[in-house]
Length: 64
Image 1 (cartoon, rainbow, N blue to C red):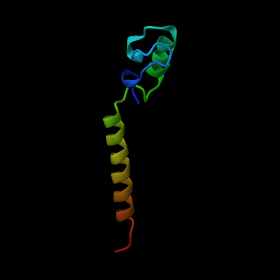
Image 2: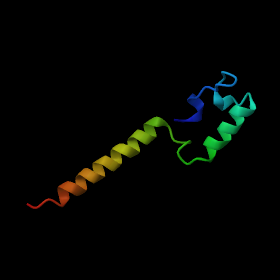
Image 3: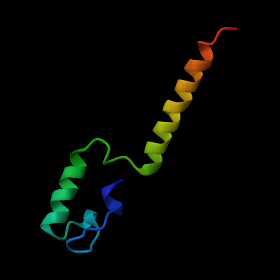
Image 4: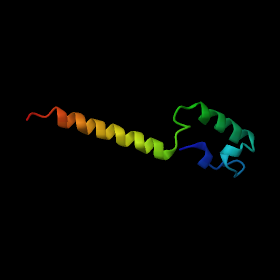
């Protein structure tokens, strides 16, 4: 999940706004993560690409 959709439990504001120290710390932590910058739709697209590739490899290696 991206940090722009999260709501802080400390101040009840979006984490992306960074209103309190907890928000700012979590925003920094998530920005450092390589998966934090990807949107959920991009993650879904990557997953579907991986599944399609795996299926193509299985079909290609079956005997005729």
